[in-house]
Image (cartoon, rainbow, N blue to C red; front, side, top):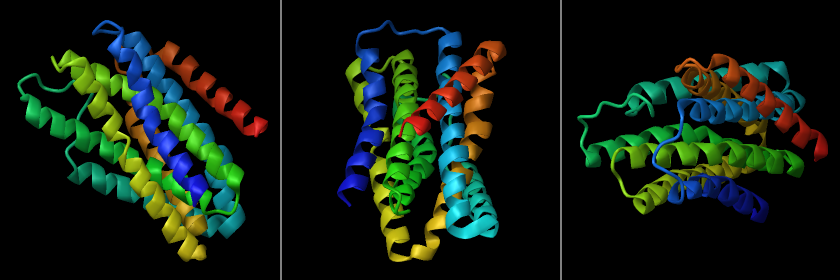
Length: 243
């Protein structure tokens, strides 16, 4: 319990840590660097899914459990995306007022963070401490650039630096709640572990392909983003092998 609490808090607060530079940097950053950060995050999450979550689900429950859990994760994220207000960090309409815009941002990032928190909790419940630590680290690493981009977006909408920093930090807090939920459910119902791991993998893969990769390829920096994606995969593989 102590491990999952520490891991979930650290991974969630990484969103705020990533937003810290926004307090000292200029209000704008090039599209190229935004795309590099997004693609790097996608690479980290891809490696974490393929090298930890999916193998763990296969080992614990076999291919059938993996298939069911993975498609369930994709389905749930599809439903959430269709029902929860969603925003595009680069193409939000200018006429939305601050209060409405802030609510849309919080809703969108909450949607994005739900499966991440669940994946941390489920991983700690899988009786493999190294898996939980690894997934918490992977989520934390990808949360940092996400927090930076969210804070940057808010500042570009004429929101104060400190307010943008606080909002970006709070968007990661939902991961603590969903992490504990995932941990308790899979701890009580041990048969859910392989489905939970597969669910987390499916949800993360959905986010990678539906959100992160398209966003990183939308401004003419496809080649640079591709290199960053590969570097993110290699970086995560290095961490996996080091554990």
